[in-house]
Structure formats: C-alpha cells, structure tokens
Image 1 (cartoon, rainbow, N blue to C red):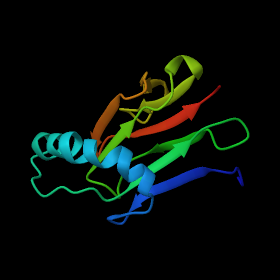
Image 2 (spheres, rainbow, N blue to C red; image 1 turned 30 degrees about the horizontal axis):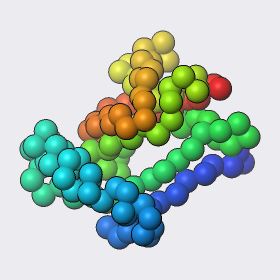
Image 3 (cartoon, rainbow, N blue to C red; image 1 turned 60 degrees about the vertical axis):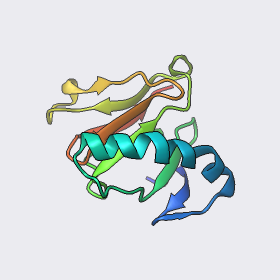
Image 4 (cartoon, rainbow, N blue to C red; image 1 turned 180 degrees about the vertical axis):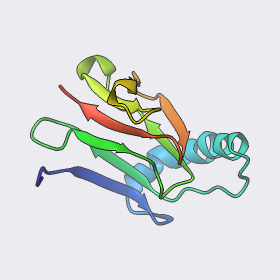
Length: 126
C-alpha cells in the first residue's frame, strides 16, 4: 500500500549496529531477558538474534496485520510509550475471528514475551 514504515535494527543477525542502543540494552538483555527466556522456554542455548524498533505514528504505517513470528522462537516486546497517549496497540488474536482480539496495555518498561506460535498483531488508531 506504499505507506511508509519506520524500522530501525540496532542489533541484527547477532551484531550490534548502534553503540548507543548497545549501552542502553545489552545489560538488561544479558542479565534479565535472556535468563528468563532460557528458563521459561526450556532453551538454555537461546540467544539474541535481532532487536527491532518500530514506530506507529500518523502518516506512517500504524498496523501490523495478524501473524505468527515464524522467524523467531521467542519474541520480546518492550513498551516505550505511555498507553494513555495512543489508542490500540499490540493485540493477541487467539481465534481466526477479529472479534477475539485482546489489546494489551503496555507501559514504558513493560515487557511482553511470547513464543513463535502466538497469533498477534498491532493496530494503532490514534
């Protein structure tokens, strides 16, 4: 649909591309997120593959259609925005019916961790 999308990969294919983001994220990834993922998903060899920052603002793409994360065993979604500043956001869709969507209110610093087989998407109205 030619709608512009802003995506930034500070870490991709096992390599840091941004020194600034590495300084901010590496400690919490290594000390908190990876240990949790390894234990919760019984995967002692799980490793970080990519870090993606995506924004949803007027004039740019504000949806990411319902999907499964076939490229990752586990995905972690970190909230960056105050949930009172937007409507919509990350949703889970347990059934094929759109009416089954459950929107999550994720605040700054909140982390949602899920496996590859969870059907989900993003829709930001405002």
